[in-house]
Image (cartoon, rainbow, N blue to C red; front, side, top):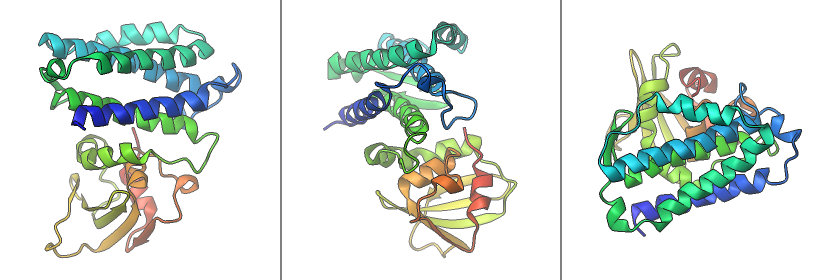
Length: 259
């Protein structure tokens, strides 16, 4: 299976997971809060629906060899979704997401191989573009699911992709006020050994076995670390398998206030 096929399999799985969780929701239920405190469930779906359209615009730019759409394109798309009734935001989001994924599925591999662009400070190919979409879709799917299932976790297949790209997010969103911190983080599902360093900057990098151990350590599922970095590991949604030594989880939560 190619990297593009792997990303598409994970995106379809996330799509079906969100569809199943929202298909039977009533007009009243979709206006209830999501985990994103400023958004209702419908507004989360609206964000994902508009995101499908914006990612399709980026896909088209990649296929045409042109620059990705300017930031000014986003408010125009958002305005259309903001004008919808909440129940329509939910239904249309699922349909729009499905259409985007089907379009990618229908494209010949050699056409997708032509995609290469600069996006959000990164050089991405087709797999990179789909990875960015998977990050967004996975996190916001959890934002919806957890409201009816407090034990909900991120999908393992998505977490396996996201865990190796957290350093990019950390670079832009982490805060230094809880530092200094030197912590070795070991994850499960998948297993990773990482070093978190908080001083004037914050870094999260692979930890080599020959490096002397840090002053503190953390062990947690990979999906929990991802949620921590995204600001979604509050005490009520922290797995019992998370353990720390020499550091308090609240210091980690202060380092990652969320996006």
